[in-house]
Image (tube, rainbow, N blue to C red):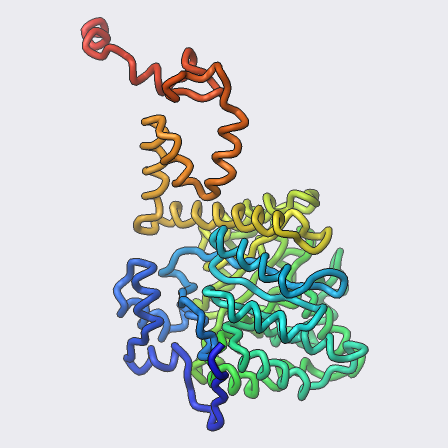
Length: 445
């Protein structure tokens, strides 16, 4: 990595700052090219806060991308070590699998090992934006979370910004007065960051230090161009707790903080709920967009049922497709290990594929220009029995080839114009293509 920039005079370096002054940056041009948009549309959406380009000035390996309503729905992959498992090489392998499978961003959620070394290695190797949750690192530096201080939290945030982190989850909207609202919940607080802050506030009988020092956080963010992902410390952790008073009280605070960030030209996105019944999803998007003034919406799932340990990548992808269709802008993947343990490489791959499918389905449903081109190309390849084209167009070509090889048998046509599902005799596409149309038309007449 190039020598880290350390703005000493707190100069403003954000994409929003430049956009509001009518300036077109290389990052804006890159996003415009990726999304098939006029660069002026990108600049205008950035200036309004409806689009973010997470692009820390110290992330020199970054290929910029955009998150917002005018862009494709994006997918984030969480990686990172724990106090039980993980090392640098393992996390770099997860990063490589994430990028290979199409993750648009990654979040390093490491809580164990050499946290600075792991984060630095990920940033240096990653062409996609890297996010973190700084309170995890801060909590690892103290014996008890009650020993955290505002000074330590701010120092960790600046340290990570200097390293090149592109966006950070900051749980600044969870306030003391919100805690009693969660007491009647079935599972209480499930956000790790939210849980840390709840314990700290209860112990000290003081307000959330991230809220009290929000202006100091903005100073750091605007200097390094760190996009703030305003965290949902009171997100529902089960269907019974979804869309309750606690969740929306925090969201209201996040809406107020969004305006404060925009006053300082700091980019913001809003994190959304984790477990939501299908019938409440559209309402949750509508509330976020209204309360948070159109800021991009970044959601964990949501999971639409609570009974699927081992299959929660599916329950999350169902909710993800729906919430993205209704207007969410980025999905955080969930893996089969959700609620069970730290994901391995295969869990990462499966989680990303499931949520890339959800994001793509939403782009098609939202009528995104060009979103269906790949689907139509796949259909043409299927009609032509062009297996190699089908594999190349598949979201997971390796899996498609593997399953085809396993299923292909002697019952298939020698010319490849059938598969083992129907065989040549019962293949409807082949039979339809072989109809003698002139004779059929005359017979029908």
